[in-house]
Length: 170
Ligand code: S3P
Image (cartoon, rainbow, N blue to C red; front, side):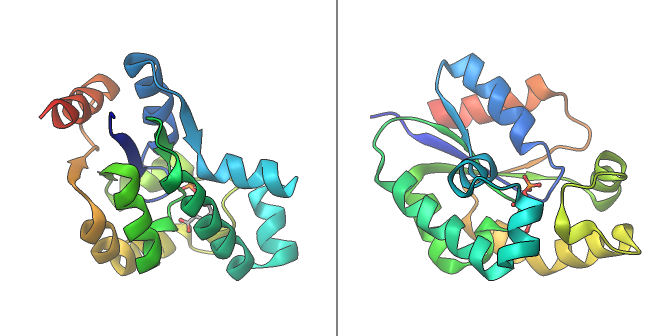
């Protein structure tokens, strides 16, 4: 059985984009945990946060991961930026396959997501500061479960994919 690939990292680090491209390259289906949750709940992530609350969303992430960890088919899985925060989720991701941390600098993330209205955690007065603070809080959890860390700031999409494919072949 081939390993699935779990893409983790902060919002705006490129998980969704890399996931889709890698899916073409490896001819493997791609799933995005945020999209799967939106489909199941029939609501956008912003609405889930606003109406049902963040704890409900975090619980939905864990329940989804349990299902994904049981699926023996190879998948590319793009995870929401907060998924690795729960230790239980980190174990489930490890069961899914190779965990790849796409690490971006705060400035890179800020430039990519400024003006975005779909990320409830960054709808605040000073998103730049919030990005730095959340990144610092999360770095240890991301590193804890990563089999591979890629500093993506100065890499092309192809270079990032090459690194992941090399690790899969190793
Ligand atoms: C979140 C990241 C989002 C989404 C939700 C919470 C986070 O996913 O799951 O808004 O806690 O970092 P992306 O990383 O795909 O933006």
